[in-house]
Image 1 (cartoon, one colour):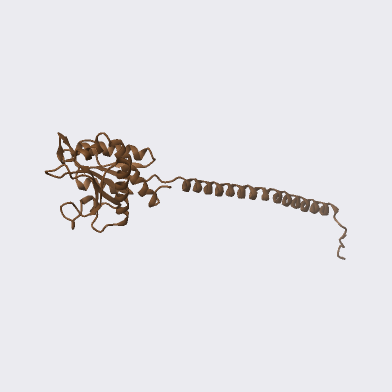
Image 2 (cartoon, one colour; image 1 turned 30 degrees about the vertical axis):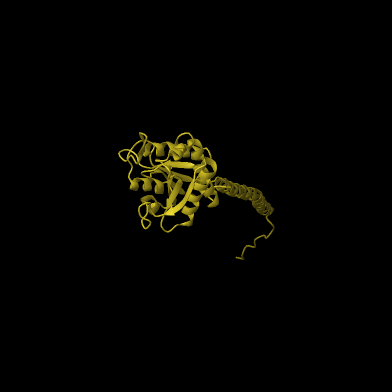
Length: 256
């Protein structure tokens, strides 16, 4: 028996089906390509917007000037009365003056931290701690001087560290110059050490981490100097504040 011979004619139905499948695949690919660029554009756009926002935030942050802090120390307080004259204690005068200086500085957008705001005892260690923890740019400790036996010794002076650091010298000198100019107070100069011993330092000058001075705001034993804390107190407070502001500008803490 002979082998059966098969017909080899073209199956058009299969050809058409294959073409249809290929066409569908090509169309799908084209559609996919159409959508992908849009998605990438969206992602890129989103990324660019985020980057722009970050840059904008950074610029805003850098344009906001950090508020500088100054520490004002009202000398004495509580059981530590300081000197006394005419029934008035030094601790009372220093607190009044410190609060006026605080007000003058805050009106110029300077942040002020006070070591005391009432008639309370505050240790030297606590005063320095308040100053240092506030990251103060400067501390001014306000006091009154005293000379026994005569009213003819007068004028303001400031004491700084025995090493005479330039920043403290600038701070103290500026305050004294402004007191002389604006409050007509005699300038006895910037001195190092303490009134009792030029080789030792007041605790505030020794332990504070910033420019510092102990400001002796005239002699409580001098009627002329007492005007600084009575009839001329506003001018004196402004002069002290102006001296501090000049120092802050010189050191770049605030704009000139």
